[in-house]
Image 1 (cartoon, each protein chain N blue to C red):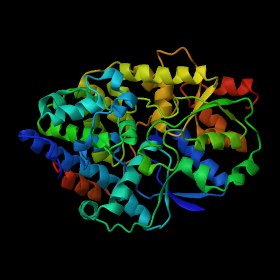
Image 2 (image 1 turned 90 degrees about the horizontal axis):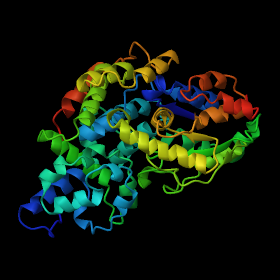
Image 3 (image 1 turned 180 degrees about the vertical axis):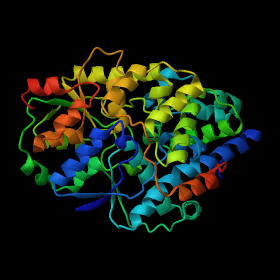
Length: 184
Length: 282
């Protein structure tokens, strides 16, 4: 990996993130096109280019503690416009994985949502929206928001009581087992 | 034309009308869509945000199931499309990861199938005059803000047209007699799955999109994504607009004279029937 711009232990951090994300973050020259287009930039503590700058300075704790990595909606505007071909959404996914492995999750609701979603997939093979949302609400103890919306959807036949489950759950189970704790 | 069809989880539930309209329109246009037997969830944002390998292994299962039939895979949901297309590109171009994903998902990747979004199918694969020749009712008077969102057009390597200023949906809407407006928010993000986790933020993002569509002179928004459609309908508290949000396939169905479209319109959280009646379209 070619991250020879960095010095000291920042070099190994940059190399680790380049390796895990597959993105050439050492090429970032802070043009801020990503920041200009960022869908979430108005709501987050750092912009995408600032996240890269923090990594270049070896300030990984600040990065992992940032709400940006969890509020990033993966809209992929940043990557589409980057003149250096850095797909920032991939970098964000890599940083989320690092944060999870270190048990530093700054926006806990988002992680709880992902857990509820994948829990439903693991159980049924497909997401069952009604139970997935209930699981999320119990995990976050946010029991009352969107109740009126849920009722409207139910009345309009958009939420089913029973899940549609896939048949080959043995294969599904193998996939979940083989990918558990297997971060790139 | 015959394809394998991957509906995805939303289309079985909250976005039923997208599924039913896509199937009905395909049938009316002589396109056969065969639902992939025993398909599994693509993993969506939750898988790629938390587990890299799982996010490729789940779509790989669906590609392996479709390989038996040998037809290209049509996908209506923008998020499912993105995950399947990204997985196909990884399996095609990265031998090391391909071997690993093949071992995880128990299959051999053949690389013979193309992943096609349902928008791409009707806008690019279908001969141009085919749709126009079957229109029974021109949707004149319907001024539409065509909203593409994120994952149909980005990243550029999975996109089938200009990622900054796409026009495939505009072209299809023109072919059925509707009037797309020019606006700048075609490819903005609706907030996607943050709708449940950061609702206040998503309310602000959606209000801006809906208000800009109104300012551009549209009387409805049209989408090709179940999550965009849902968010634009239900997270607009900070906007005063009551403009409806259609799936583009519902409007094609209306133009083709498919009677079931009335049932689909009744399912919307923001009821579009008053607008359609005022334009004498239903």
